Length: 125
Image 1: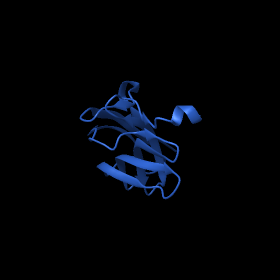
Image 2: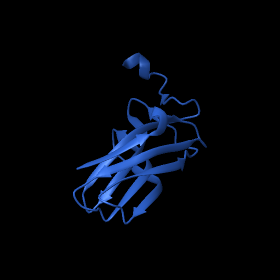
Image 3: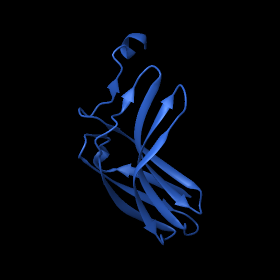
Image 4: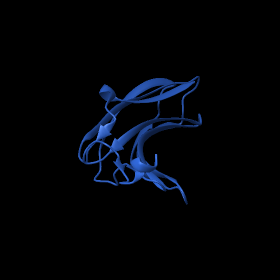
């Protein structure tokens, strides 16, 4: 069994308004109930971790083996961030329902294309 998510042209850094294009593909021994592709961000670090799904593309009645292109528009934020206590990370997640299989592709969202890093982060690393 395999489920994969890939971003087109190997591009994984985006600015607000950019198109986030890619391909989700799968090969299972049976048909999943449906497949969802999600644009999301999540936090990690000290304290509670949160995840927010920004947009979803649902693929109804998928075959056991198939591939579908997806496209999202990168939102205005929050920007990818790395600090001493918290990180904000963006990604694309695919979920095959009924198969219990997931796949992810990491991405960065910011005005510069690079994650925002806390000013003192480099000094303590």
